[in-house]
Length: 90
Image (cartoon, rainbow, N blue to C red):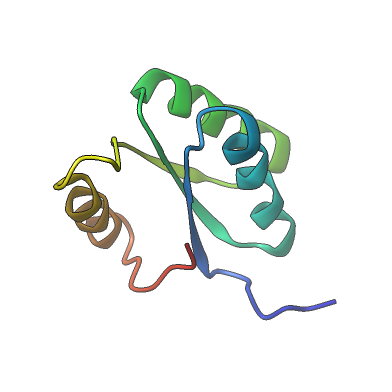
């Protein structure tokens, strides 16, 4: 079934473990681009590398603590600077 999501972007928060990490794997099945954000740069980078190896697709990361006021703005700035992410499903 074509959901029309190929090349759309999805932001996965809390992507370093558990449900967030698992949720980051599903969009690859329909050709979506992914951005993982979570505290802990090393851990989300490791998850992104694992997803890339499993799916053959790329997975961007932005280490951020979204409980902090400026973190959402920083994440948005990173998105627009990285490959023209102009819209995303969060």
